[in-house]
Length: 208
View 1: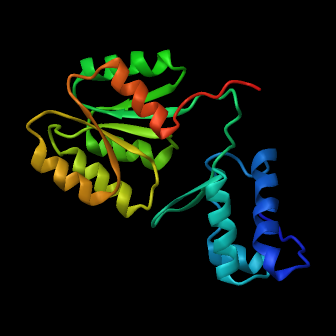
View 2: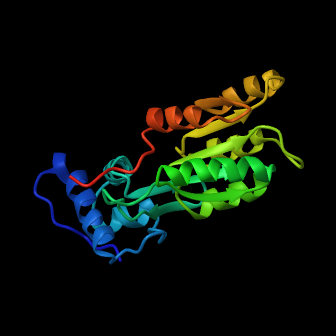
């Protein structure tokens, strides 16, 4: 449920709207994964311009409380508490690689989901929120580039880690045209994965 909030200062109106929506998401009034009304509808509800409403949504996205998917809408995202494990998606057709990465990630207290095709990976990305994707570049029925294109087209901001072989140079160059990526060369090593997690900030935070 999205309601209108009263604000006194036009300059701070988008912040007040973001704060109001944040309260609704954190309280569960707007549930995790719930699709919000269109930005045009919300602008009318709050009595503000579309530009102001967009600024509020951008602020919420920075706070990690909503995610936007191009052509699909904006979705509420429950806040991650300090002791909540991050979620990572592995997309690879090699079950041994999935098992190895799963063991490494779960050892770092990270929740893991997996897919064996680019199409399956795209479906999972559109239906759930992930802190990172570990993506095989070469798979039967479609390369990892197809997933990267979908991420780019849908405006997703999920960091992607490509798992590549030495002979994948042409595909790597093609992949780099679809947004920033991080590379891990095969064979996958524990130290590599830990370094990438640290760089991306995908780590469980200890309670203060």
